Image (cartoon, rainbow, N blue to C red):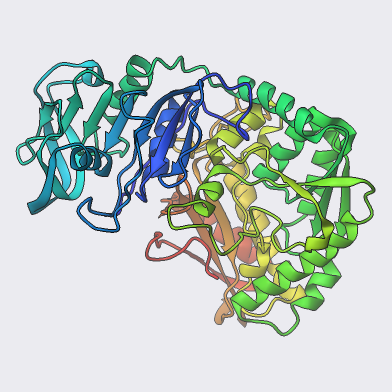
Length: 553
């Protein structure tokens, strides 16, 4: 069952995790596609949590306040279904068991789980049978979201039902004498009206969490942890100009100062004037940055290549060669720092085993093993929203923190087909007009900032007016390999088309196109056609993801 949800975070954070952490909740992942959302919801409460595969349960120390069991695509009746040993958890720690988790507790501890007469998917009204800490402050009848093909026919030993729906008698139950709470619905998804309240009741009332995990506390504990880990060693960090690597750089700089050596490679596929402006921004922040203009090397590597995957490989291979050469100029380097964030960690340690591909836009994958560098990832437990909040707490300029995601291969995959100097120039100029217009145009009344964004118009402090750019998760231009006939003055033209793209999303997994105002689109189209030589037509992409993707290649 696929869920499409919208989630806005308030305060959040984490690191490797900091050794000074005083409280946390462990989430055991059984393969649900919305397990991350459980973590996001808890972090909205400023409660630190970690997601671990069910078959890699961590050592539960004194900092653990509770455990959550996620949903799963499996049936507990399947011989290959996840079946962890909970003997060290159940009855010892508070537990919230969601969907499959609730069914597993019933199946494992004396209850009975049978196939549902009819599959139970979608909205349902939960009727609370008994007031309890888990349902404190929740109306007796409220909407929840079901997603299962099995149902609990008989409760486990010592259990008592606390809520039902019209079709599910044992929609929620608890085990008397211990803090084990089980629900057959998904409180973490948007469609469960009081789901956030249920999770708050579990974290605060039942687990006793204080909700004091803030950007300031994360920064303090991370700096201490990084200093202890790195000592007097030198660290190399490949900057991309994006939010993740920038925040990682500033955090490391706070911890180890000039021991951090940053490398910013210009691959010739950046936006207009981006290499110079970003490099200047880094130097203003006091970072030790070495800029490397390798434009010619990348353009030569891309000559004659039109296949998207071949272009990606050529760009990645060239980057590795350039980065490796520059890194070897730094003496006594022992660490390679990366801006890896929590969704990437989860993907690579899923219940299905480690990921087979390294995402080049998240880390420097494929570097020669002979570099013999240890890895440090100061943001590896943060969601993107949290990275932005930490960045603001570190004092990084809002224009950098609020930057949209940008693909690792850059304009190399936005110029469709073979990449040439001429096409890059056309696309850069059109893109600059579009992005500048988004940044300078006030958002219509009622529009909201994108997840983790802040108002940027007219100020670097995040206190200015809300712009269209602030309300968009990602925007950019595409140059298709298509020329069309046009008329300019008394002359017919045969020139390129520029496609505009703008989407809203929380994580890039699903996205919807932005309903930009017609007058804005009209002005941008007119400006691009008049000011960018070689363009006579502008179109706007109104496809969502799925079925389309955010990028065209």
